[in-house]
Image (cartoon, rainbow, N blue to C red; front, top):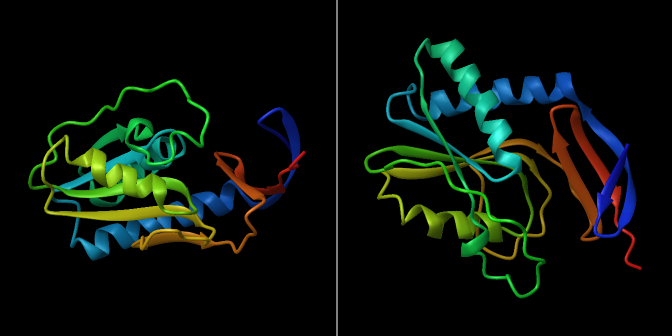
Length: 181
């Protein structure tokens, strides 16, 4: 599979297929319910952009298991990042999140790398209320943390080097090496 990164194209190798991703998301859904003794008070928050799709799948699985809908929202943390001067500006997406007071917020994202996106998400959540607790569900943990951030729910640990990229989509999980030209 080809992936565009910056101005160059990267060849990606598939590490997990869509069936693997589905199994992992089913397991994460069960783990969330077990840790929280059911779905009461849960609020799933997908981080733009990779976590939104995953949070929708997890919500669907929790609804199927518990026969009860859970709240869901999306959060764009781009304006809360501490590395804006090092990253190209992306168009801002609107966060779709209601009041999180007295909720158990489960942040959902595709890849955990340095921890800076999660730090930004924690800061952004302050604008929406004060949850009972905040938990973190990640599809892929690739290491290289720069901040003391640890996920509560992990789909797969994939050790990488800093030059590799990890792509998660509904077709699977892919790994490739960036050209640093």
